[in-house]
Amino acid sequence: PTGEACDAVTEKTGFIVSAHFAPAGELSGDYWTLDALENGSLAMLLGDEVGHGVAAALRAFSLHAIATPLSSLCPRGDSAAMLRKINQQVCSSNSEVGRFTAAMAVVIDAERAVVLATGAGMRNGLVFHPDGTWDPIVGKGLPLGINEDSVWLEQEVPYKSGDVIVCFSDALIETGCDQNSEFTSDQIAEWCIKALNGPKSEFASLIAQEFDTASNHTATDDLLIVAVCIP
Image (cartoon, rainbow, N blue to C red; front, side):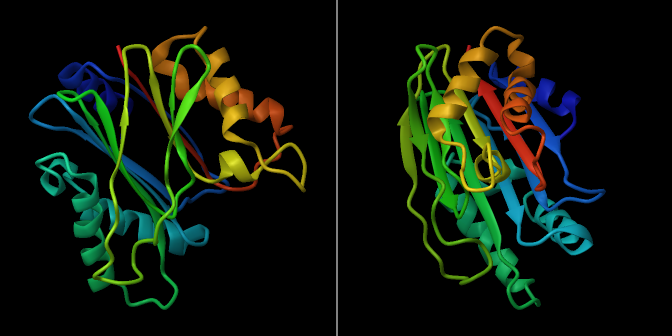
């Protein structure tokens, strides 16, 4: 989504959305989208296609076509139902052996003050609290495109004013500070603490800056970070 699209969702929901996207090459298989729901809640989908280059980018474009508009896939704010509907269409159009899509569906429920999340092979996200603590948003689960009848369980995580919901692709974890290590959720929380000192509208980019420094700018995979600040 464009910055204007994120601003429009912020106007409708009050949630301050920011994103950082850094493809490893000219094309990328990482994807995300968002939409405001009628009750003031926010729906998001993150996807990470298997592979790189043109093939992964084309599959990401196909996912975009399936997931637009996102509000039509979860009118009641059900993130698990969102993934089931998307998966059925991915499976029906999947003519490639081994075409899988890691994904995470997230609904920030404004009425109940909870994050509803359903993971399909993504890395865990965070509900980050201003005191530096955090709760996990579990991303594990069967990827999209394997079985048309796959079922996922929805996770519910409460949030409060001042919290930040952070979701990301695997490059943020897997790059690590050297070839034999990965970054942890605690380290990402440390970057979030530093990002609190900057504008909320740039939260995702501020995390990315801390990541680049910690990884010595060695990332070789597509990097996607999405942050939603709760007012």
